[in-house]
Amino acid sequence: MQPNEMTVLGITLPTIIVAALMGSALTLLGVFLQNLFENYRNNKKLKHEAGQKNRDREMTLRRDVYLEAASEMARAARYIAKFGDLNLPFAEHEAIVHNFGAALSKVHMIAGMETLAKVIEASDVFARINLELNQLRFSLLLDQKNIAFLQKSVEDDIAQQKNLVTRIGQLQTENPNHPDISALATTFQELESRIQQTRQRHSELNSRTMTSHLDLSSVVFKRTLSFAEKLIEVNVALRKELDFDLKGDEENYKKFVCQSQEQAVKEMDKFIADIAKVVEEKKKALQTGKAGSS
Image 1 (cartoon, rainbow, N blue to C red):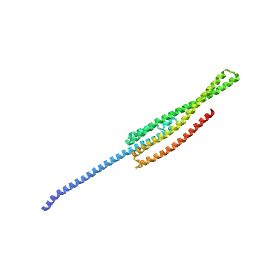
Image 2: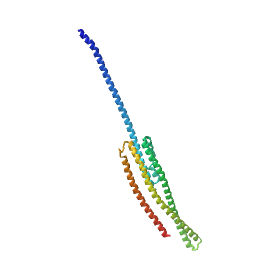
Image 3: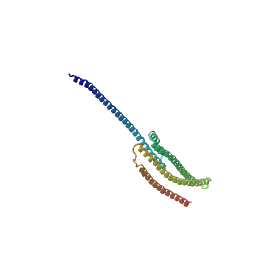
Image 4: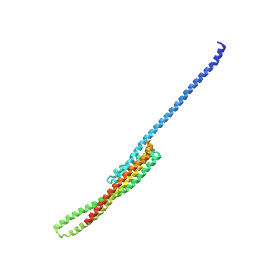
């Protein structure tokens, strides 16, 4: 081997080794960086998937709770509307909203502040309406009880009169001058006077009850609509939280519903006015009949 070849090999060999080591190092660094990036990307993906799963679970929970709440609030509107039905048993009426409080309590656990504010406002309105209509209904139910009592009193007095007539007839058959006949006749007249007074009270109370029932029906209808307005606000808030937004049509939606309610109010007012007219005509007819009989 020539000297110049030795020199070239002596210089080139370390250079080749260093280059090989540097190449290996760069390869390892590349693999390390690639693994680091993959780990970062995988962690980010896992976090995103975990976050998405949590959001999906949260949205599922909200959907179930909000749909239940919306359903119960619709039942609450029906409950208000049923205050005008005095023949509906109290227990059956109360059963309509037996789950109302529980459903809204769940909303308090997961709702945002905007939604919660709307729900609380609707609940407060419902409570005030409930108190007002219960008071009005109680007064009417009490009048109905009194009407039934007066009717029973008249029937009992008439039955007693019939017994007196039978007894007087028996005594007259035995002895036309029997001393008990006069007393029995006086009792008969006292019963007749009491019957007339009771019938007068019955008629007046019945007339007042019919008017009060019409007034209650009108109030019930208006309170049902006022509660429905609160339900609109709640439903809009719930839709937003469930990503079922109206996409800019919120005001149009409210306007459309309000127009529908206004039309319903006009029709109900006309219906109440027509019924009130019929009731007034019946009152006048009764008064005219009494005047003629007297």
